[in-house]
Amino acid sequence: MIEVEDLEVAFGRVKAVRGVSLRVAEGESFGVVGESGSGKSTVLRAICGLAPISGGRVRVAGEELRKTARSAEFHRSVQMVFQDPYGSLHPRHTVDRVLSEPLAIHRFDDREGRIRRVLEAVGLGPSFRFRYPHQLSGGQRQRVAIARALILEPKILLLDEPTSALDASIQAEVLNLLDDLRARRGLTYLMVSHDLAVVAHMCDRLLVMSQGLEVETLTRDALRRRDATQDYTRRLLAASEGYPAQETP
Amino acid sequence: MTELLKVEDLRITFPTRQGPREAVRGVSFTLGRERLGVVGESGSGKSQTGRALMGLTPPPGVATAKTLSFDGQDLRGAGKRQWRALRGRRIAMVMQDPKYSLNPVMTVGRQISEALGRVGGLSRREKRAKALAMLEAVMIRDPERVYDSYPHELSGGMGQRAMIAMMLVPDPDLLIADEPTSALDVTVRIEVLRIMDRLVSERGMGLIFISHDLKLVSQFCDRVLVMYAGRVVEELAAADLASAKHPYTQGLMRCTPDLDHDLRPLPTLRRDAEWAK
Image (cartoon, rainbow over all chains, first blue to last red; front, side):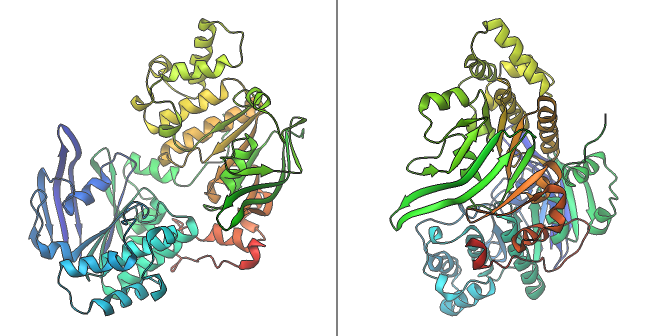
């Protein structure tokens, strides 16, 4: 579904991504993990055209992608959910408007019914339809962002840290929702996160990135067995265990 | 254990159009020379509690308490002068994000020297030596370079260490750390925690560690207050968190995904209106 080969992304002289390859099969959930500055979000942004592809090849659903231009079909079938539900919704648009705009752009029929059904699918009742973002909590906003992505019936969701701005209990709800939607609709996920535990929960396979380079690709089971071949991955694994009990010097 | 801080029935009220709203509703605790964790979700009042201990409740909010004493001093209704004598010198605070809480147009060294200036009686050279020693104590490998750097020239982890250095250089008795590591990468996070841990145990400081990360707090602190809707719903030893009694604490412990266990769907928190009462 998604094939990335030796992807490079350069901003001026700075190379944010320096040769990254990954393949995601249809219906699979694939994760990209790394620390800040590792280029993990840039990979996602390059795929959907928010960052320029300056080297390598990217194919999504058979379509070869150039620099930043994407076809109308791409914009329908690939949707992105961003990290910050406070920044990614227009503050003066109601939920209804947020959801009807993509429908109008892509000339969908039965807008009324689609909005009703998508709100139900993300666990928001019809009472939320005419609210503004400031009348919603963080978790509810992220549900609206997911609804906006889903309303065009995409095949692929690009998830950029979808829960890291949320409280732990809300994170659990959103992760469950994403898991459930993928199972019911056969979606393909490419998810970026700094949190190994979240990625291990959501993804079958994952790529570890550091400083714009790929470190290694692991399956969930290998991760659980702590079966990492690279030092960096081992350090990341150790760090995500939390604060180690006092060592005696 | 000597009692450093005593808080009884702390309330913080903000006026709203619908009348006064209490963000913190009767929080009581005492702190010795130990690491106390304060956990809760956003809006639980944990940060407001921390700020009130510094007299930094943002207006028009008002903090009241039956007792608020620090090392025997009554802080209720303390004037500007009394607060100035305490803040920075005896009570220090580390904030979440060094990008926003360091002065962007002043070098790190000058900011640390300024913190020392309040202590008084030091020459410029002594201040510089002390600042450099402190930067070294927070594991900055090249203190001279960091001393002359501006905050934007430092990485997040480096900036946070510089801030901790600045807060600790006057040798305070109490350190309030409000999500000090949440903006940092996991590998850097542990180094910063280790530094704070060492400084607390070596200097016998009291530490209030405010965080939303229950797992981290259970590993790092001695005792934990769990806050919900402006109240402390449970107080327990950090080691006992796994056997917490309150359903809110239990729910928070369970709802984060865990590398080793595949729980699907993740248990979610069923909020009970009773908890807020």
